Length: 505
Image (tube, rainbow, N blue to C red; front, side, top):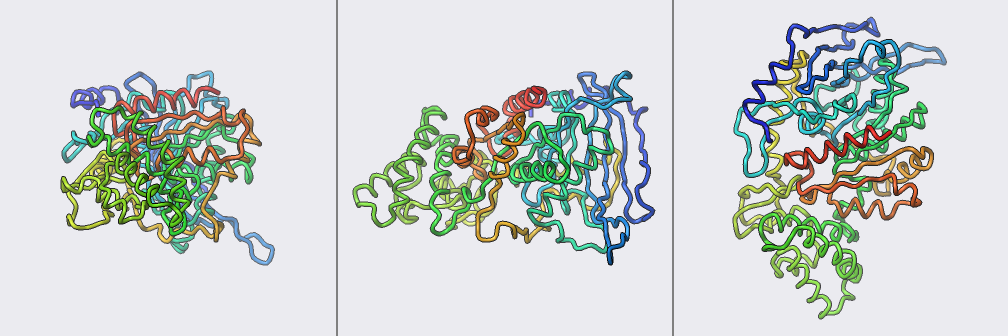
């Protein structure tokens, strides 16, 4: 990150610790075991903007009935969130705020919101460094002067069993571990926060990353259908809206072609394409994937020997993989195989979340790599940052472990998609049709092996949209990975574009 020790020192001068305070809001239940639990503090950005943070757990309840009679509202889950709201000038204090609000979350499923929170959107961020120049332990925090808080208020949400969010005692821990259950719970958090804070007349934006993009579309649909709440925009970072484009499964050839440009981009980063420019390498891979390679995959054993040999040769040129490997896999390999194979002769594997990162393999002879050196590189800095930040700067105390990226949400249920791919594009088509003012911002990372840019482009190309609806999309490409904000210049570009997005109306 382009921040040094001096910035950390000057940051303390921008915060008036005499203004800090912890408050307990009015309780919404007499149940002492399940009450809203927030710490409220006031801060100042280096740019001079005063803002308030509200960090803690919001209790969600269900209305229960028996024999047609109400038995009251029973607590079901405690959802951790951090809200950042700009302190309004006096004339606006008593009326509804027209300042935009961004509701943001990551994905997984099983990921907390720490990545977008401390890597991109919030006013404080992780000092993690980037590939080739990682910050050593114990890491640190620095100011994020370009924070989205300059343009909009911000609410970071952690779904159940991520962060500090948990079910209430006596409830089933797996109750919310599914597409529909998670969708409805996040929508309820947004509705409740919006209502309690008198923000129904504020422009509203949902920003998600990875599975969080699928969640963002689903939640926007739920908000509209259940509560009549129309959002102004969707920010989709490292996008997956149709899981079939990423699922390497027998009889499903499309993902093999859709990953090809990403393989070429990662090979380019590691010096395998000489002095060629990245755009030219990617464009060549996209053209071949959409034409000759896509055709060859559909032909199977019907592909002639000469055609087969030509495809092998071109794949070797584009990916820089060995022709023998390409033949052994019959033109079809998944990302875990690519990770193990690309730099095998250098005794390195490449990252999945970010293909720029490398590490020695656990065993050099392995043909598949399930470990991800990019996640290993950033997990420590982000864990240290959020655990320090929540207590020391936001004033919220909880002895539970903050679940950064957890398997506790597994198994995850997609029961509503039984027998068909998980796909929310029909929901997005419907939202764009019903709301002619809805806009969509999309961020892609060329070195993202988890949600390849060409797969997302494939989804847009197959959506049933007219030209007017397609004009409401903006597309932004970055020479980085899944979390493109790890690269300082990408973070600056990303925040500038998001700032323009949320203030455009």
